Image: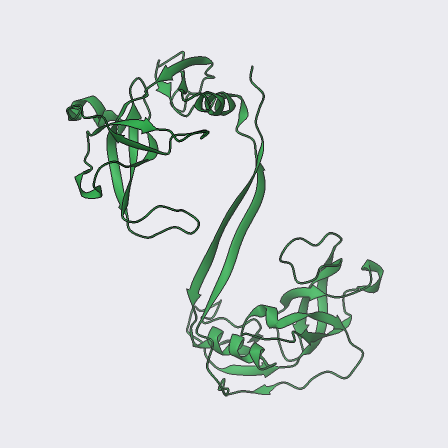
Length: 314
């Protein structure tokens, strides 16, 4: 049995969204050290504000300025801050009902320890030195013993350009372990071989193997070498260049049914103009020196496969 592999994996992408008039005013206000809420149809002031009433689903837009001070309604201590969190030292996550608001805002509270935090304690906003129109313009909350702030109506108008959109980076860091079956598959790739596993019940060969048949639900263990040649079953033309991927667009990404396999895997098609790639095209892998997987697949020069040969693998 091969060693089970393990490696760190990061999934990261920027999430971009536009803002409606209420969210735009809220973030623009944070840039100007003003916290805005919105009046719901039942008279409550909602902070953070929303564009539509959570009860009636009606559009709401009456803005209200609330204070930069408030009361902790509940909290949890974070003893080990992670990358990208508001503070680099241990802090409390708190829900704060700002003076003049009827709902609570989630943020960080800078406190020396959990014994210094309690439900009902008074806090105030600590503003970031540089503000850009984002929730991070509130650097954190801090304990406060002063008088409550005074809320009031607000037009939502500010000097300077309004914030109309945000880009929020989304990232997931985790350790991936492919398991017994895929570890054997990856190990075979390092010797330029593609190995799947055959189901003992339906006799189909799955590549990459998962350790169990997805149709019958029974364990698989019998290894079967497939390919290296295969057939393009379906494909798409990629016209948007991916970050950190040194491939010129347009290019073709395809599902490829390797000879002897009963499941198509995906790979890039090269060695042929993108507009000449077609279903049934016969291809073979191209390996680069030291690579653990094919760089791309290229045409073999064979006649195209008949549709009936691969139609069950679409």
